Amino acid sequence: MGFEIKRVGIIGAGQMGNGIAHVCALAGYDVILNDLVADRIKSGLATINGNMTRQVSKGLYSDAEKQAALARIGGSDNMGDLGDVDLVIEAAVEKEEIKRKIFAAVCPYLKPEAILATNTSSISITRLAATTDRPERFIGIHFMNPVPIMQLVELVRGIATEDETFELSKGFVTRLNKTYAVSEDFPAFMVNRILLPMINEAIYTLYEGVGSVDAIDTAMRLGANHPMGPLQLADFIGLDTCLSIMQVLHEGLADSKYRPCPLLVKYVEAGWLGRKTQRGFYDYRGEKPIPTR
Ligand SMILES: NC(=O)c1ccc[n+]([C@@H]2O[C@H](COP(=O)([O-])OP(=O)(O)OC[C@H]3O[C@@H](n4cnc5c(N)ncnc54)[C@H](O)[C@@H]3O)[C@@H](O)[C@H]2O)c1
Image (cartoon, rainbow, N blue to C red; front, side, top):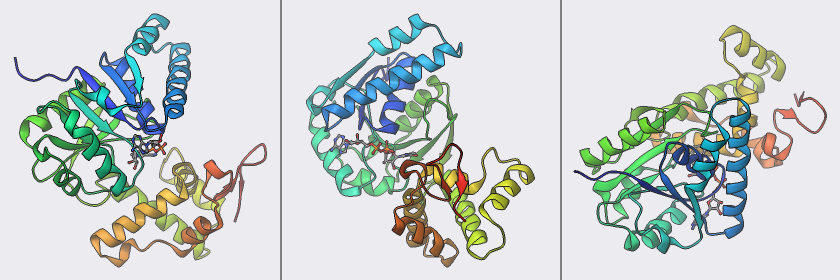
């Protein structure tokens, strides 16, 4: 029998890390959820519990299945506890320096055949892989937010990623009941490369006075059948995140068509980052969202 993924370690218990732990445990994997901060593990586990309870009440699975899944997740703030996992998924903050440090810290504990994956949304897989002791066993497994709901996972091979790593990753995503799409390792991969310029263009449309916030969102919801308008979606993603992805595209592809809209920069400078700060293209402080322009 060849190598099989049975135990998964997740580094970073934030919104992505806890979502990844959630879907892995439900699929029958044993999970260790790691974070630098013990409190983040605690709140990550509480979030998983709450999200699973909601799914049980929707009839997606039974309470017994929920309990069994929760019992498969352990928390640890010690990287040494990742020694017997078969796959590590790094889902810590989007800072290259921090990711490099995490890989340097965890690799000495890992089995030689263990696969190391990153959930990065924008950093080059090839460049991250090159800093590790296992570029052949390194891959990008890019989940979408919120992980328990979104169907897609982007799989991104670095230049050195070997076929077995790729095949095992495909099997892993399939067992999570998700669908993968394979992307080459270029800035922002596929989903964000297409989605963010659309959002940026919606902000230019607002900036140039072609339409109001409400008119632009209504136009795209009813005219293009998008479930959310682009400005509403930008607020949901976070305007700081939108700006940093546009910067990655602009710098990484050196093409002026990716220049971030000055109005997006202004909102970020104001600290109006969308839902998470209660204000962005909409003001969320009242009962219902009110357009800010
Ligand atoms: N938020 C999204 O929509 C989204 C979507 C796809 C991918 N991603 C990517 O997923 C990753 C995580 O994003 P997030 O939104 O969950 O962030 P987050 O801020 O919610 O969580 C990050 C967690 O990492 C922990 N952490 C930081 N340094 C650590 C270390 N050295 N060791 C262990 N844990 C550490 C933090 O304590 C925090 O709990 C990023 O690379 C991001 O680009 C995010």
